[in-house]
Length: 84
Image (cartoon, rainbow, N blue to C red):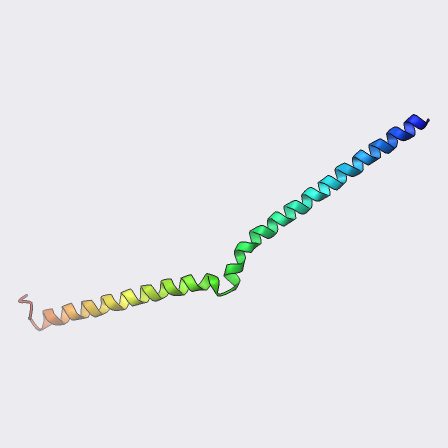
C-alpha cells in the first residue's frame, strides 16, 4: 500500500512539474509577443514620422526645383534666346 502511495505522489509531482513548465513556456511566449510590440513604439511617437517628414520635404523641394528649372527653360525658349 505504501509503495502505491509513494508512486502516486511521484506521479503527481511529475505532473505538477510538467504543468509548471508548460505555464512557464506560455509566459515566455507572451514575452515574445511583447518584444514584437516594441517595434510599434516608433509609430506612436515622433520617431516614426521624422523620416516621413524628411522624405516628404526632400520630395517637395526637388519638385519645386524642377518646376523652377522647367519655367526658366520655357521662358528662355519663349523669348527665343536659345535660337529655337
